[in-house]
Length: 549
Image 1 (cartoon, rainbow, N blue to C red):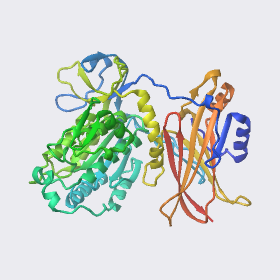
Image 2: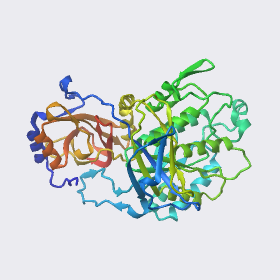
Image 3: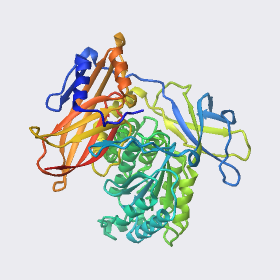
Image 4: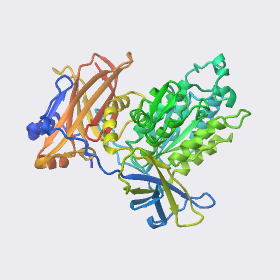
């Protein structure tokens, strides 16, 4: 168990540093410690394990419990695979609230408040669709939240030019409803009708109320959301309340290839591998084309890798306007991720209920692919059940990207993802668990002292020659003043190179120390604290309110 901080004084902190001696170095951003290049760990490609969540229902659409691993047969590109792990998850029966130790006012932790094998994310789309539809969708969302007793944690985001966190994970439906009630979508910047809009695919295929910029924004933010949610274990059900958008802005445009071959689109030439690389890095808008089918597929793959199933709820409801292409996008993303789309209904409350309940009961199957040729091509997953009336929903497959290349590209994007997580509108991340003690200036000490204690069980140590354990952490504190938009940033590193005895001592103490000194002027601040594990690229964040006299 991660121990509380009440008894962890600065004297103990100093004693621990002395105990670890030269094996543990802590440095500020201005004086970052370095190690011998021969000690720096290198990324190692591992066999990729494929995790597939399966929703199993009977002919009446009811969940089918008590199935065994032998009731499922997994195929990859038509070839049977060996199931290496199997679990039955029924969220409604095993959601528990973690025991919360009463911490003093000066201490904050990002330890999850809920232990759940599934979480629900409601994404309110405020950039795709027209104002009247968004107003109706908001009204229906409020009705759902105010009238529903939640049995597992739910978080609510708004989709604007970037993700906006309305309320972090909680089972308190009233708090969620209050957050949604206070939210006001930004004013639409898109002109209702122009010469260009009348000549576009929107005018001929239907009334979609979106733009190319909004489409690129949506895909980029879904990509960013997937990376945030990847830090939470288990299945994540993304309830996307949106009118969505057409899959292809210009019907005559060609889709990007997924097999690594290049294609020409007017004056542009883009190869499939570049498209994959740009999608992984999050820079989706750099692909110069008007067909977003390839990007939708790639974002779907990122969502699938994070165990996110998409449940689009069509906020356009039943109207005279034709938006079949828009609904096709919703169907496509739902099918590819193992979710389910809801459309052609004016009862959004019922659809929200159905979306959340659908992902409450599922099976998790894992296997190691027999095909170790990581050629970047899409591999189709097929799962068959032993019962004739069994209906199964699961993700369609994955791209067989080289694990070593994926690790390298993910590492390149880590800094951006970590910085995004330290912004005020980001939810608390729990990939790395820590507690922090924040002491304001006192006596001769004119600086704010932040002492972070990281749970080593959530850190990836690299086993080196000589039985040494190596870890490198980035410790960051961003201080947001109520009077300024940009934060003051304090960044540092912790490098641990531990002998077996020191490693065991750290594990028994249940924390790895890191500290920061903040030179802040008097005023009110919101602190965003973050720990980044440089070996696994996982991170954790927490928020603390501070007044400096």
